[in-house]
Amino acid sequence: MRIAVTIFLTDETITPTRLARELEQRGFAGLYLPEHTHIPVERTTPYPAGGELPREYGRMLDPFVALGQAAAVTGRLGLGTGITLVAQHDPIGLAKQVATLDHLSGGRLTLGLGFGWNVEEAADHGVKWRDRRELVRDRVRLMQALWAEEPTGYEGEFGGVRPSHAHPKPARKPRGPVTGPRTLVGGAAGPKLFTHICEYADGWLPIGGRGLSEAVPALRARWADAGRDPGALQVVPYAVHPTPGKLAHYADLGIEEVVAQLPPAGEAQVLGALDLLAPFLAG
Image (cartoon, rainbow, N blue to C red):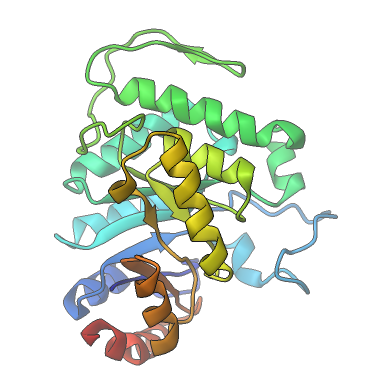
């Protein structure tokens, strides 16, 4: 079982370079970073986990800049977003960011993407909440057209791009309907999410890892119905707190990678948390 980590890196936490070096030296599989551009003060959207929204949500670093720093001081560590809020980006610019980071890191990027939960944040980006899932699908397809080996145009409901010269290209070769870096979609289990995964991604990034006994077989069935390679589906439980029992259960489901949650803290506390995860690396 590969063990990666995720953390809310902020202007008050351990730095990306210090953390990335430690992760690689200790044998962790990867570093995944979340994204929020800003948190409006006047917000009616409830925090999904309940209670007050933690301080780190309004202070987090840009994931692509931080992962660029992590890439520069490591050679093997996987780099991921968990998640990129695709609807809040210009897709042509985002395609360039993603491809550049993947190219400069030697193909180490996982693009974890999702639809968001903060209505007010998305609204400031001009996103109509009811359209966000289809908007994300449209923008991913546009980016995949730019990542194609030959100039490829795309015209969708929410925008398009002419056939263009767009380099660098992501390192991975096309597989099935997917072009670009390893792509995982976050979100709660359900037919709509599973349709998205099967259409344009390599797999699923389920937060917390609960309910997978029923959800993973359902996703595998939908994957097979879509004509995807049965052995290619990847499910990566995200922001989990590992235990031997959990990891054994995930292994029984065919899961090969887990992303553990680190505290949004300074160097001493974060390194202490890595020490606590060390036994799982050996297993």
